[in-house]
Image (cartoon, rainbow over all chains, first blue to last red; front, side):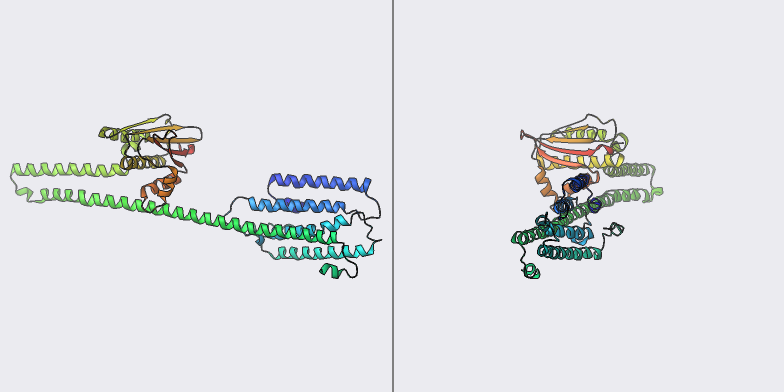
Length: 153
Length: 274
């Protein structure tokens, strides 16, 4: 949430991020105490988180496209924020179906699915990490030196 | 297929496989769309910026050209009119003046005085054309009224002006610019429109200062103005535009809905007022 709050500047979108995070946290807490069955991997929480991240990513991209004209505006892919957001988008979009599918499955009991789960998840973690490393090697915007360097993701 | 092979003997359920692949394709598609769309937007903005810069360049060139033309005109006036007059005075006063008899001497001095008076008048005219004294001393209202009275006095058309609220004058530089704009517009109307009347009104609100000029001749609409000011020969219109930009104002050329007269409106922000 902090990542998106620091990347999105529109007040309206920031509010959406904050309120949706609060709602998600409340849902997870309620789910943890009252609904979740023990011994199974309840991935619905992660699936909802994935949807939220995808929505926040779309908000970020939308803001980037609609922000006022700036004569020194950089191409979006030359900023680290683009690669970071893309990394999370790809990861959560790619694993979304995996989380939905594995809902209420006992990963320990179903070793075959557990292997498939680990494999798909690892592929997307790898992809995410590659994109994050591109972000690390992308130079920050000269107009705001250190803006991203001082932040930890 | 890679996923299928990598997972060994067990195959990934098709719902999961195609769902994951679909979501991945959607995400990648979104990113690609964003990248290309943003590139297009940036290119479009760059093009706009370039056009704006070109427009600014044209205006700057026009204003430099105007300045040069003004200098040439002053130089020509001084050289062709004041120069010969002063040279003639010199002749009158130099020509063995002490050896002349009393009547001839008086006549020579009288002639020289006449020519000096003409020269003074000429220099005054040049100076007035640079900065009208009425504008400097009494403000825009008096200067514009003066211009309109002169036009009216010619008898060729009916010219009138009315200032509704000019208790707070414009700043000196801006007053001169507005005066020049009005002068140029009126001059264009006299030259090209074949109008039978010109009427100027001034008004102001809390945010803006307005000048409106109506006439019943053949005038310009905004589209025609935009077209003409970008043509190399439209120096007067370029000057108007450059002065309006400098004043951070807006200029509108329109035809009245009744199609009987044309209207030119100049709108300035009220912070131009003193």
